[in-house]
Amino acid sequence: MEPLVSASNLTKRFGDFTAVDGVDFEITKGEVFGFLGPNGAGKSSTMRMIGAVSPITAGNLTVFGLDPARDGAKIRSRLGVVPQENMLDEELRVEDNLYIYGRYFDMSRRELRQKIPGLLEFSQLLEKRESKVEALSGGMKRRLSIARSLISSPELVLLDEPTTGLDPQARHVLWEKLYELKSQGATLIITTHYMDEAEQLCDRLVVMDNGKIVAEGSPQGLIKEHATREVLEVRFREGDREAAAPLLDRVSVRLDDLADRTLLYVENADAALSALTEAGYSPLSSLPRRSSLEDVFLRLTGRRLID
Amino acid sequence: MAVPASVRFMEAQLLAYKRVWKGSLFTSFIMPTLYLLAMGVGLGSLVDSGGGSPAFGNLSYLQWLAPGLVAATAMQTSAGEASFPVMAGIKWQKTYHLALNSPLSPTNLVTGLMGWVIVRLLTVTVVFAGIASLFGAFTPLAALMAILAALLTGLSFGALILAFTSRLEDETGLSMLFRFGIVPLFLFSGTFFPISQLPIVLRPVAYGTPLWHGVELARSWAIGIPTTFPAWIHILALAGFTVLGLSIARWGFQKRLIT
View 1: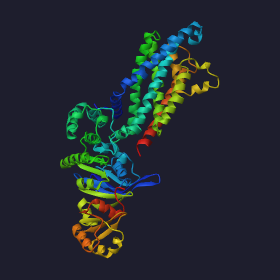
View 2: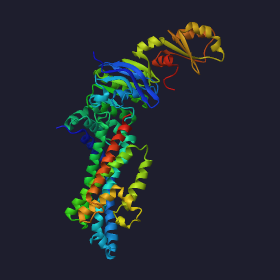
View 3: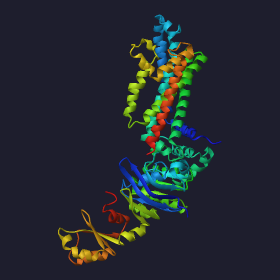
View 4: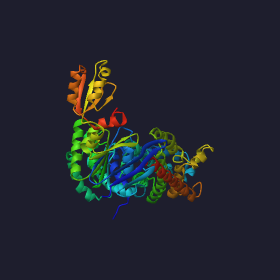
């Protein structure tokens, strides 16, 4: 099947600064594709190039098989965009924000009158339709920007950091909404620096760091490939870390020393903890847990996602 | 029938205007009326009794002032629309960045904004000229001619200030624009007294400002006061400012919004 988005050696430079450094990826219809990486990794720049609002510096990019440099308006007419900042007109009513944006896509007044209530219902904002945007909570504003991106019935939706800055409850409501879209067969591209978000939502993702793609795969595949099944986080008593070194090497597949603790990559975290305790190195604190994309990122870059 | 993209962006400005229209009543209609009353009627009664009339084409000061004031009001209107609201679209609310995620282009935005400036100019100048007519400042034809000249004036300011705002980093530049641009122009471009009253070295400065050309045209067309230069020079100057402003604005929007 022809990919919806195809990039090869895609590069974006701002003066001397290289934001996106020769990345390759393909995104196919019906999948939820993620760009995971810390702030400044080049995710948003990549997104803006796909959105045909930022010219590429080098390489190749096609969206719907079209060249953004030549057919930008055509591409944008088939896209839904949820920008990182909501860009809502705060002093206008909720439904006016949808109406104005719909008009940009040359939808008629009648079409919009029919379409807006459904979108407001989907985003749970029907009762707020006549409220000014400034009266909405952060989560509601985010849902409104998602509703706005859907007004033109896009074939592909770009979501740049959809849940950044939201409280946990609002994030979960938003995830539900994105699931709903996904189950309706929408193609979504999401950037995020939250590994749980990427794990929850993405069928496939690339990990970006310093403008480059450092890994690609499904969340589970990446964890399997770059991390072990479980991780044991431990804080040792003074001197124990050095003394236990031979044992640690034996019980763990790999380990990472962070400033305040040591991460042991293991198949069974509880078993590893027992082994440590039995050998007399019972740690000050310990946390056995499943591996996550965070560990993948740490493994690949030597840094944590959110510093 | 398909509505052109620029017109649809203009329509968005109209909707957005709903939130500020009450506040704009004062600057759009009441302010110029107050100037007309204070200067035209109040100060005018003193001017008319002092035998100033030859300089005013043997008309009352009110009749002489009114066409210039319509042009100056057009300048104020354009300045208002092409400054802070544009900064909001570019920087504060980023609604222009949003619009560019749709099929609209930066050129559509510039054209749509200019269309919106024209709509605002028409409403403001028509209403104000109507009010001035009530005080006997205009015959209907004179009012119409003054409005026409005011439109040309407003267009050139709209285009120039749009260009200026598109290149500004923050609103400091806008405060400067009003303090050192719009206010002095309003007072010293021949609206309230002929620039022949200015020191001779300052007169060429007036030639470089759109308002003076607009005021000259407004007075010539509305009440037959001869222009300093042939009328076509004034028209050409205003058209030139408009074209220059629009070209820079197009480039500025492109450079600012497409990165």
